[in-house]
Image 1 (cartoon, helix red, strand yellow):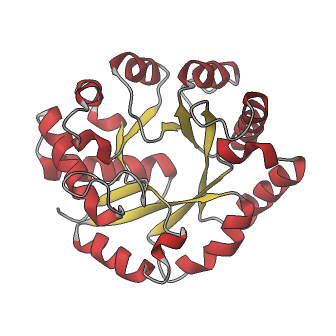
Image 2 (cartoon, rainbow, N blue to C red):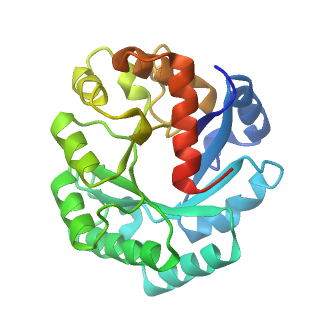
Image 3 (spheres, rainbow, N blue to C red):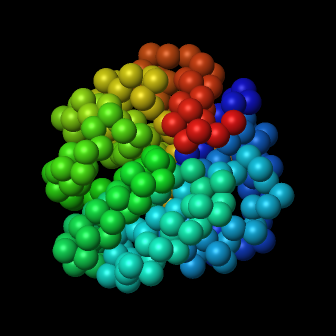
Length: 259
């Protein structure tokens, strides 16, 4: 693909990559990716992993507490997040945060409390929010609306549902990010929804090391493989793959306010 692509959601600090971050980023750049959104799942992960990316200014940071870890979210967590945002200009968003009623590693009430606290922090810092929502879409939407996030910068990360949810997200003025699962043969529902997403509201992601696209499904994902996601998306949308690649990259940079 041409230069200018952006992987809006990666977890390159995970142990799966060990000391291979330079090689992973090099392969991604050769595939046409110029920008990477590195997601740190909590202040401790951020402090532990931020220096891994010192040599790579093309990587910006997203910081949040995942709903799986919501039971450990405290006022101190919020304070640490706020301090990190104030100190580090590479942190360009709060997230991924939201609700996960599929695994329920934390109680619903703990998840809601942590989610609302992070939305408040996003408002205070004027940063965008990256949403995780699994089997909790109605409640996620309700909290976002009640928190006054209509027409604010909200990105629905790893979208995998159907056309009705996509329309509701778009009606709120928010963005949608599509992962490698759009390439899976049985995922017609996602492709149907994708066909109705305006190109200027679409971002692409790997969520690596998870959700590798076909033909690498079931293997460890990495940003270079996002090319297959872009090709599938362009086919569904009836667009030139290179043009959509650049458009989604520009959308990412504009959304997060990075060069």
